[in-house]
Image (cartoon, rainbow, N blue to C red; front, side, top):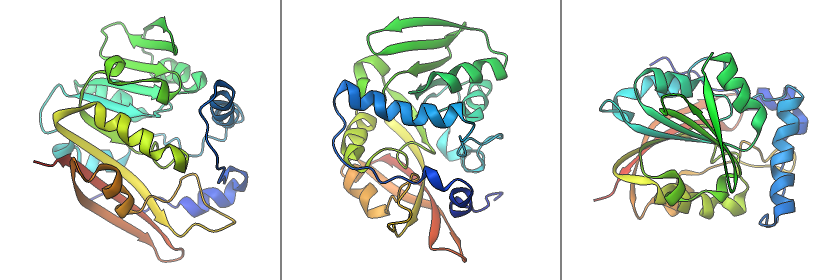
Length: 245
């Protein structure tokens, strides 16, 4: 294994203003725009601390069980400009990302020298490579549904569930469950810690029991890795969710 503990606490010591524990329902258009604008400001100010410049090692280490056959259809929610998208695309898979902020979407295509076309739809803009194998929906994640997205053989969730608000988790789980193909693989990377008044994320604490509540009736959960930091009460946990027959 090549995995190393992702030092979340150190990241937030560098950027303490990122910590947020905002509560309340966010269903109106104005609240959705406020939510997207918060992330837009971080990208615009160069504070996208979560963006990795290389392919995520969790994805590399577990690719053989996550992608057991070629030409899979892969969803990457809240994808930013993750280089994982290009790696999956180069491996021959059909890749669909969802991102609320336009800046990282444009940077992704430009930095990877990928030609693309755009299409407008009711919720935002769709960016597609010319061969239609890589698509990014630039819109609010919760504006999408299974009819729009279709079904997926695989979901790679490295910074999505940990980023959304607590009150949105059940909606998120319903959306993910609705797009899973019969023989799906859902690779999930989360952090686990004891929230405090000083720090409660994002990334937010995602206990394994919470994942069982959200997905356990349709998914079998397997913990692949549990990496801890001896200096702090933080753990990075990798799980594989598969069909529960």
